[in-house]
Each structure stands twice: as structure tokens, then as C-alpha cells.
Length: 218
Image 1 (cartoon, rainbow, N blue to C red):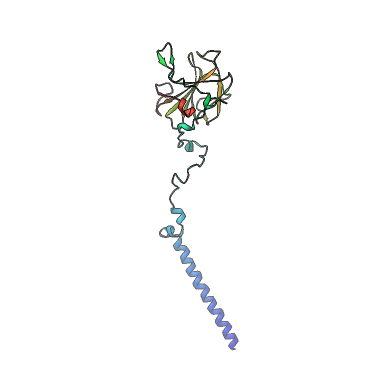
Image 2 (tube, rainbow, N blue to C red; image 1 turned 90 degrees about the horizontal axis):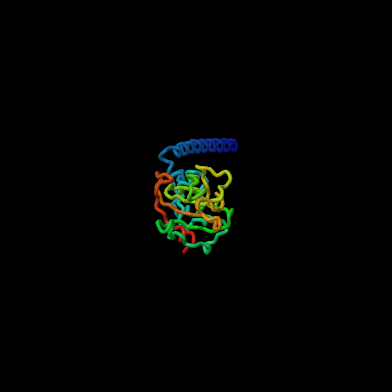
């Protein structure tokens, strides 16, 4: 009988102990889910967002929201004619035009006819326009809306290019030519950078800046 009594005592003790732990555990789980306990039991949910320095170098996703936060610095400009090196460039920004009545305010990048013209930065095709002076031209507005990149004297546009289209840095947008008032003997890309405002139209007056030091690192 003593052995039976001991076994019954052990069983009863174990059962009572398990019940206590089950009740206590349930209470802890319920309290952990309450709003007052979230910061204690789920600290990751309350962690601050990464700082800009912690995310530096990360590639943005190719979405309008991501691209709109990207600011392209001058030293990130791509020479917009394929196979042209910085040492090949000449500063034609301050050259006179129309018998000295105006300044050129652009960079002439000499290259054989048909050479690919590349987008210097990401942006949006604001306007495809043909004029007597510029010939076949492209106006690309920067992702922040405050700069227009102007490509002129093109021989042709890239196939499928259209207004409103987003282009990436280095994307082929046309070919070098002599359209407009350019000489057939000297095909080149007329490339200008115009500081503007987000609400200004593509044709409105804008402040020109010299592309040469930005592309040549000189």
C-alpha cells in the first residue's frame, strides 16, 4: 500500500504543477499581446527607420516613387555620345553665333553621322520637336523636374521613342546627325543643360549652364 500511496502522490503533484504552468503561461501570452506590452515583447516593431548613412549605396527600385527621390549630381552625367571620352571634348559654350549676336550656350560633341546618342541622365522625354535651327531635337526633363537636357541636330530618333517616356541614364535615344542648320560636313550633337522650374513648360526661357566642366572633369 505504501508504494501505491507514493505513486498516487507523484501523479497528483505532477497534475497540479502542470495545471499551474498552463494557467500562468496563458496569462503571459495574453498580456504580451496587449498594447502596453508590445514595446517590451516586440522591440523590432518600434525600431526607428534606417538613417541615410546606413542605406547609402543602395540601388533604388525602378518605380516612379523611388526615382523621384533620386538627385543626379553633376559628376554623374554621362557623355551623351557613344565612344566619346572626356579628352575628346572641346568647350564651345561661350562661342559666338549669328555673327556675334548671341552665345552658343551649349556643347558641340563631334562624332560620325549615325553614332548613338545616349541619355546623359535618367528622366522623362518632355518633347520631340523639329525646328529650322535645331533640326530633330529631344527635350529630356530630369526626375526632379528642375533641369532640361536638350539634344539637337539628330539624324534620327531611337525606334519607339515617344513623349512622356521615362528613360534611364545611358539609354540610346537617337543618332548623331546634321539636321537643322548644322553643316553636313561636321555632324555633331548639340547638347545643352537648362535650369528651370517644375511648373515651367519645355519651351519657356531657362538658365543655361555649361556642360563642358561637368562632362570633362576639367
